[in-house]
Amino acid sequence: MVEATTEQEALDAYSTIVTTVAERVLPSVASLRIGRGGRGFGGAGSGVVITPDGFLVTSAHVVAAGGTASASFIDGTEHDVDVVGADPLSDLAIVRARTDTLHPARIGNADQLRVGQLVVAIGNPMGFSGSVTSGVVSGLGRSLATADGNGHRRFVEDVIQTDAALNPGNSGGALADSHARLIGVNTAVAGMGLGLAVPMNPTTEAILAALMRNGRVRRAYLGIAGGTRPLPPPIAEKLGRRAGVEVHEVVSGSPAANGALRGGDVIVSVGDVGVSKAGDLQRLMVEARIGSKITLTVLRGDGLVKLGVVPVELK
Image (cartoon, rainbow, N blue to C red):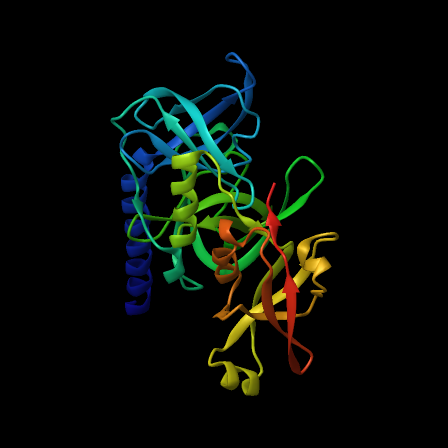
């Protein structure tokens, strides 16, 4: 009997967390309707308010249809919105509602997430506004392959994997932690029980700031997909860190391919800066790197080799 009571108490605690998160975050999540000129319906998704004066974050692919857009909220209010800018590499975009009375979500830091941590997804799947699902962080540091519509493959790096149910229309919605902080922007449904979200962290906050300021992000492009890989003990001891970025795929014709990077290489540093995960590498691909030769130190087989690579501007 004691065990049954304990299980019930655990379920009650879980429910309390999810309902509290939903109550706090739902007012900040909008249902976005994207038009193809005029008021014609072109697509749908979700967005999350990040400033009281109208800025919302959403997914870049949600606003790709262009045209006019509108945002409706759980309290029944609706506002016209303008697309400010989009960054396909991170699958993030900024839109601005024509109002200054919105309720922004609290911003968290996904760099502090741990596998197994409780998360709550809030969005508007299949046209059902204000839908709430919950689950756990299933994995961190994943890569998501995307296409830009011009036949070019790109990779959204360092995404969060979760088993919280996601469906079409969830894209651009909120992934929140148990403290009702926005720690991810839902971006894709990768398969049954497999959802992905772009993390909210210092890297993505810099991207969002650039989009709000300039409407675009100039960034350097290598052309790889990668993930964290533990380093062999002798190399880890020599370098003073435990992991590097394993190259899973090299895009044909990319700077990485021209610089002789191969699948299976493990990047351990860019110049003098060590990298341990895809997000570290992404943070270094700033505007100043475009057209400038950089030296990558990679673990290939049992040894470290240096490769010269010249990043190009991501188009």
